[in-house]
Length: 234
Image (cartoon, rainbow, N blue to C red; front, top):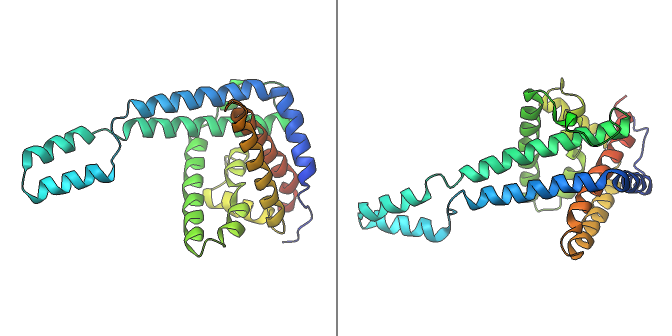
């Protein structure tokens, strides 16, 4: 496939800044509320399974102390419940905000609206699977001497965005689309990623509050880059 479009980092960041100035406050509040809710769910999820807990359970089983083993096991029951609900909440918010950013930049939306979250259940499920598969790919590429991850991760970063914009597409079709549209732009996407990390660090230094606004800039920068490169699929 011929590559007709190249990523212009400056244009992507300028566009992200303009949209963040206009819509960033409300979206930052959504990120803040998500963070507070997921943090609260983590608190009610029970104790985490630590190495100490596993060791204590192993020792109890080793000495056939069934009473202690049962007590330890019971104390860990349901520890993942809060984490699971937190992950579901993050998925819903991320998918809805992807759709919102896409809609704002395409003119489908003129304001921050929860209509962006009114998507078919199948879309949320597909994005979850896309995230799962791309995460596995990134982990495997990281294990391959780390260096390959810097060439693989930028190529599949658009897969969830593509899936949101094309809910009818298959999971692997979305990953393939991201790979194709980012062809020839690996280093540009790496550069954009480094700049976004720098913005996040600056945001964190602003009394930690700015980190949520930095997430808004990241959202719009990724969406702007997506719109720049999606023409490579034609």
